[in-house]
Image (cartoon, rainbow, N blue to C red; front, side):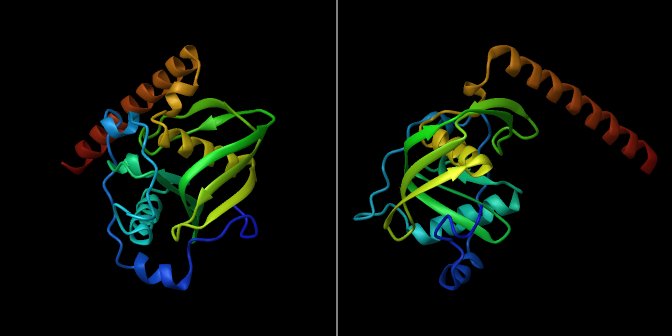
Length: 197
């Protein structure tokens, strides 16, 4: 995500908040909030402090090595997600998709479904509208991985998970690969435990 494309969340003021922001626990894949359409975030009567809540989302995303994280992935029903890398994160309140073009088929993962990689088709380029943590409205154009990440998190806002975006056979293959990987990890753990005895 290039710094000229977005209003960066990581200002000096927000860095102070981030240092004390609690890290949220990630909700499991069967958690009800993952499948709910989230209501609009009301900046006139905010349910939480927007800057503090976004800071916690950023810190949680960083702690889990994610590119994006939405409120409902942490069990909250606020219409907001964050995305970014390194120290450059952006908070998107009340995000909307205005226009899109092109199509790209790529691997995609999700913090709510650890180690499950699936092929998902999404638009190549998008135009979006959102509010920042101060409630100011922005319109931006994103492409490539930034567009994909935005759309993935926007889906979360609408109670859609990426497994809903794949074809049944692709999902079945992805789950089979994950099952094999889990079996290998269990064997590896058992081997390490036996070596320690």
